[in-house]
Image 1 (cartoon, rainbow over the protein chains, first blue to last red):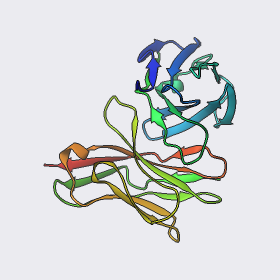
Image 2: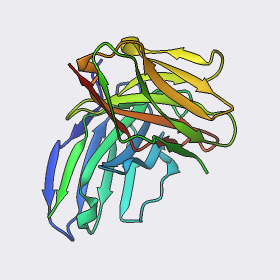
Image 3: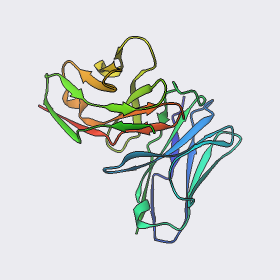
Image 4: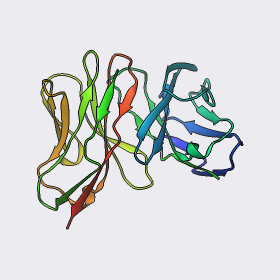
Length: 114
Length: 112
């Protein structure tokens, strides 16, 4: 079974631009979560999607948005990029939203904002 | 509010010695507790979880974790460390809101 695939692996953008990151979950998984990882902050939860609906949301500004498609693939968008948005963005999938579920992570997209 | 604390940024241990990586949590309701490991340029990999039952949970690669309800802790342990265990370790909790809350991570360095 293929794992979680995130594209692209690396991105360089400038302040003010917008960016879209993509995540393909493990086949059969319907829940997709997004995290921002920065040194010292650890992983911070952005949002979780299940069956094309946002189920949970973290404490990030409205510039961060996401969506999920009918095939469970998910995209995350960041508009009006700021220098502080430079981070590793991780996507994780699980079969459903049950609290005991393990999350399976992709390798991440490293975003650098110049 | 849910929270997870990993009080040590880095833990150094000699190969062959036992290791402990600490985690404490705060959550309303019954906690679901997890440990994940991250190797360089990789995503996180699941190690073990506590849902209910035995306080000592066994996981992958010889790791185990001890759940202590009174101390609200879930420390990760291994009896004999390997150099290949060197990585970044994250504790996580899911509580009533079902959001995954991760700690800031502890870098484990096993010295040969």
